[in-house]
Length: 406
Ligand SMILES: Cc1cc2nc3c(=O)[nH]c(=O)nc-3n(C[C@H](O)[C@H](O)[C@H](O)COP(=O)(O)OP(=O)(O)OC[C@H]3O[C@@H](n4cnc5c(N)ncnc54)[C@H](O)[C@@H]3O)c2cc1C
Image (cartoon, rainbow, N blue to C red; front, side, top):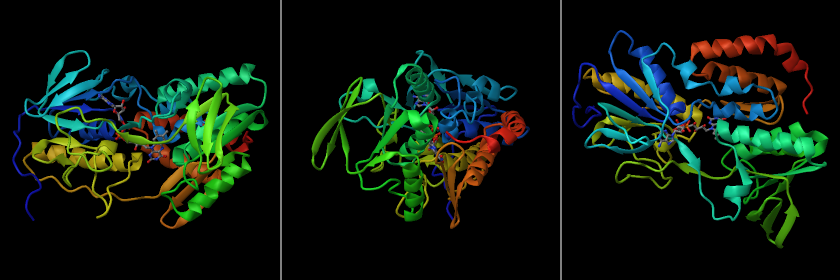
């Protein structure tokens, strides 16, 4: 088999690796590198990330129902990277020059690198709906969850019931937020889910769609299919349906529809129809053996007809391959091809309720919620953080099982 790299990159004795983006792709690559490279290859690792906290997105919903504490799912980089060779620069990259091997930061500073990892993830896709920007709440980052939590607390304190909530988007995020909000608000809330298509969780199996629909109906979430959003104002929402438009008063709109890869910041992007960067099976940029792209930003290989999904699961697995391949390239060995293994799907369906679907098995309910938390606990970024969360969880295990949802 021919080697995967078309040209041999330089091999400095003490290389500088610059990683842009501190999410599942970037942070985990940095941590794997620091761990695997210890004693093997001295290198400096700079992690460029504007936030001060990593967000473990799959568990972000739990903050809304107080099932998990903010420090558990959004630890600070300062704590995670303590004692490692990883240096966090809390700023955004403004651009990268692959010829000059430089990264320009928002501060104006220019970093030079020997190896570059681009892991800038995805972002909310802009939509031409008036009012989305100013009046809808997003739910992608720790800061979004914090803002939503503040709004909910304000409504719970002053708004007369029912508190009217609309969640836009029937994908996993919309379903998960709607279930959590319905459980949190209970009798005080009136939650509706608006979806342009004719069902929730369109790309998932009919069985998962049925379970999710049942969970929403059980929580009295009104399902509005084949419905679009026309305008959002500070206190109302206009929807378009097959029969016309309707405007209703609304206290809170959560926009959970549509994402796209973060725009490429370095010259001409070679993007796929999904807007992801085209890359080699080794996750290297074509013709740039010292540049790797990982996570949502990259069209990572999977099946012949489609790339790996844009999930934490895929980014986490790919980060291990990028770290392996970086060390291989630094040591003059051939990189290996990334192989994505789909382990299954998990989603929360409310307070202490979840769905776990793996290798043909589907379970739902409190036990599924417990399994989901245990699986994610092992995926938290460092051993130190995992142990802290595990200790905290174990002391609250009785309460977790006893507490009634809602
Ligand atoms: C609410 C929510 C729930 C989810 N639930 C699940 C789930 O249950 N299971 C699952 O597998 N996946 C889930 N996902 C998807 C998962 O979070 C992503 O697929 C995964 O985070 C992708 O990893 P990434 O490293 O590509 O991007 P991210 O983890 O998003 O990280 C990208 C990082 O890049 C940073 N960045 C962006 N631009 C720049 C720049 N110019 N300079 C420097 N840094 C920059 C961002 O601040 C961010 O920290 C969920 C996503 C969301 C939003």
